Length: 106
Image (cartoon, rainbow, N blue to C red; front, side, top):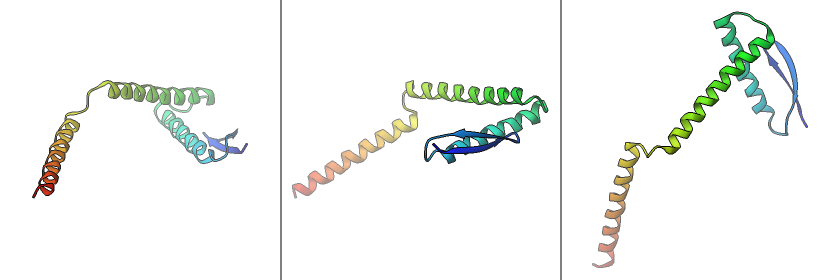
């Protein structure tokens, strides 16, 4: 199991991961570090644990909102643009069938 050392808020954390997940883990740590920087800019320097909790809550809020949007998108009928595209594709398919039928019977 590979060990990856991540730097978050200036501190080093060594974390184990599966083979091939090192870059993904590093990207997640970078995202967390950016969130901590944002907390520091907006709320000022605070204790390490408090900043980690605030950054985690901000990320959890974003995940929650994205899940709600995804659930809503999955239950909504297709957008009008999709419906128009579907109708157009049906017309094109019908026309292609007419042309093909005309070629079969000269």
